[in-house]
Length: 471
Image (tube, rainbow, N blue to C red; front, side):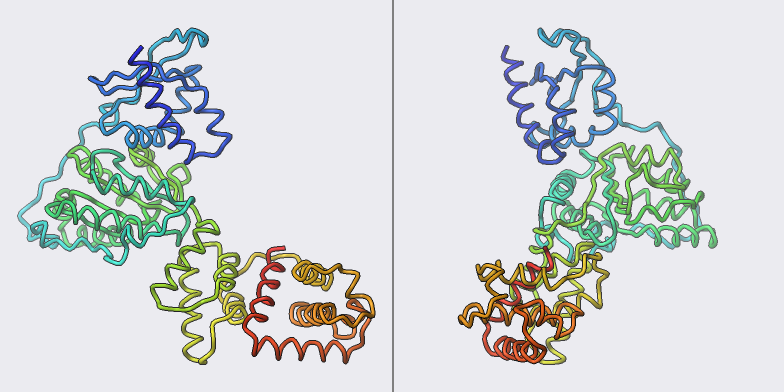
């Protein structure tokens, strides 16, 4: 009974972690039906019941990494996950099957290359002398956390705390510019801080290929192999570049096996998941999935805003919140693009001695980013948004009333229609209060002059423009 109660309590904690890292449908389908059966403290083994062999196989294929992460975080290192099939779901009568024991993840013995007497261009210096080629500006402290990257960051910190103890290899994938290089550099930097004696090396897949080719050309192949077999933490960026390069893959296969067998940590990144890597040997793809495959997604809008705020603070800039919101809404592909826009704003502001405002941001974004095509803005859209902002009925601006608040709303609508649509002044006048061409031009001048001198009014106009962009 105690074992069962413990299992329930521990599994509920694991479920909380899992729920935060899968969508609601997946959680309901694949995790809610699981029944915690017992936890054996002396053996550090948690047994869970699943409805069928197929269910077990699907969990092992699709969610084994997430299950390991949850168990490691909530129960502790070295915990084994055991499965039983629930043959009688009501009374929890079970048939045991083999679970995910850590010993089952070890590869077969592979050959180790010996060095020769040829001088080694890749000398193996002492740990403190080996340049890890890490970027010190990429660390956990300035890696901004959000919903779209929280899981990958948590796993990365776990690996940094205990290299080669769990999640080995760690395979991080995602599109260009989402922070993969930042995250793996942060892992390497943290490991060097905690374990200065470890030999940590960051290398791009491209540089690895160049080194390999040079070693063959200069008869230093064995030295190349020997050097890489001395590394404690090997970090390879953009592993997808090995695709189609058979000899490089074969060499890396032996290095991978040697390091993994000897308890060394491997960290790899790619722009796509292992299953999507074309031109990669199956034996390598299998090994990539031995540890944990974690996706680093494109930043969501809240994360994009926080990244911008952090960048702006670091650069000592003063940028209105409306501009931050506009950039975050418009630039949704990568962190790199966001930071590039801020750099452009800073340069334009310094060169032309002008304030950073929404108009400047719009100009830069239009030039730098291919914004998603949206439905063209119409005069009708503008009338609706302006009236909503000032809380005035749309019919009011079409009347002949000279009430000050209505006149101002009418003028703002004319100004924005002239600025954001290709509609002629005459047509704008017809659509807004049935006014003439001259009235529209006069309204535009009044609004523009007020924008130039009244910051509060300018902020109002920018807020309306933002609502029009996100309509």
